[in-house]
Amino acid sequence: LSPIVELNVGGEMYTTTLSTLKKHPGSKLAEMFTGQPKLRTDSEGRFFIDRPGTYFKYILEYLRSNQVPTQCIQDVYKEALFYDIEPLIKQLEDSPQIFGELVARRQFLARVPSYSENIELMIRIARAEAAASRQSSVIVCVVRTEEDAARCQDALNSLDMDKKPVVKFGPWKAVPSISDLLDCIQMDVEAKGYKISFQPHVADKGFRFKSHDFFYKFLFTWW
Image (cartoon, rainbow, N blue to C red; front, side, top):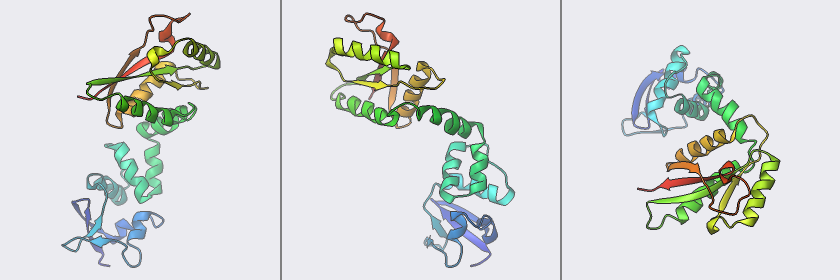
């Protein structure tokens, strides 16, 4: 290979040295250029990598000068994982954005039973009720403790909740509150491209305690 390498990364053109690309021998990026190149070339003979080219400049800057990016942290982290550049991955994981997501929020959500499955269930219910409507709603029951879970189940057994399905989150053993979990639900549904909001759901009758202690209505807005 020539010591000067021209790259086409997702339509963005870069020129660098072979030694820069192979700076971390154990990385996937280095392996791409070790021995016989394992990449296709474009019409101009540049090596083609089918990844977002916008963020490759941050990867390249790190390889050139060990400069850890301060912009587009989440997206650069995904690219660092793809190229398997271990030192950059570790430094990015120490940044507030990645640390907060991986160590704080994700570890909390791992303690909420069936969290990801319930997010998908909410979306399926909302889509099923979206026919010829601007909005569809999903009733969510959030319980933090085993005691609250029992009270919530008692309420569900005594009231049909207007015959709407109810998605139950919890209980969990962690510091974050119900409002924290509600924010997480909204954040993760919106990350999938949906526009939603939520408010306490107050039942007209049938409860021996305040229904808004447990029940919330999530509104999906379609247009």
